[in-house]
Image 1: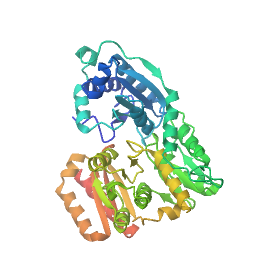
Image 2: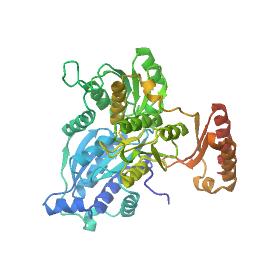
Image 3: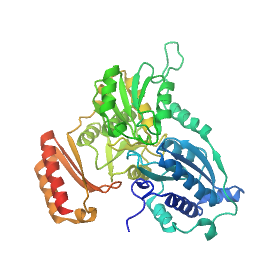
Image 4: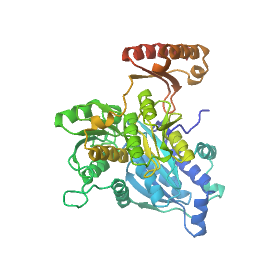
Length: 463
């Protein structure tokens, strides 16, 4: 049987793969497993029940899944604060800031509206390790109250919408305010006009308000969620609309989030896309220039562009590479005591301020860097040259058989020999979708496309 937890929690089609029963079972199993943690026991020793915070993105299915999760936790003796529609990083932040033992976010991130997911955060706001997720999975179907593992009595459920302002204020406090003409602190984004695409998702309320409070003039698009339109032709996976709106309005920049706002991609004034590698490079060089880049090291994944690696090498910054998934980036950061890491997809982790990827935080710091340097965003992002990169998804194949195929391994080796040091090849099974991903980088876009098509055909033949 396949592992229930993927690289980003439990995910599937709501009502089919991810049912209300499964959501209830996961929440009760999490309460059971985490009961033995020091945080839970400290609450009990103080005569208090454990505390969980629960948030969701605006998907229609989030309503019944939230009800199931809340019911499972309360039945298991856990007090619950319902945060409503809120970004994933806000759930992580409030888990830590409110001293909760568990954070639960219901979202399928950048996936379409029929999908949903369950993301879990432990005490301190960090995603749970694989071993803990495996233990939770093993306890599914074993009701916590019947097992006698949790304290007597039911948890209480409280609406906690007011707590959401803590998150916005935390973000704004993370960026120093420059001195204004009168010597008073100025808004960090004063003078900027920004178009922000909220993907009809969890950022719809939060992102425009935060950018306005930081001093920017804001044009919000994709900010009218109806439960069914999340990520539909908008957001960080559909940048064409944002590019057009930035140039149409003559804006200084565009920001794109995904459905749960843990990603950030950007667009310069001329409509050019600035991806996660470029954003990470900007932030890394800015921190290094301030002497604040811990270990003079940045953490990224095997998917990062060759241009990013070259830019970091030129700047004397060490790059630590991990498997794809922001959880693995975070694990490497914590193990090495590094403070900055991220993915090309726009998951950027700034451990000085957040315990997970935070799209709003990333946008704020990227734009503030441009203001501080008094440069257009395009010039700021020019710190790295992005190599042409082609990424293909090959669905409908047996991922295990593809991974073990000697014919595919030979095709990959031949492609690597052909590219030499002027490109890269990566073929890997997706951790979130039933597909195999093929990535090719080369100096010439046509060469990258031809080689990616050839390798995709080899994947289909192997699977």
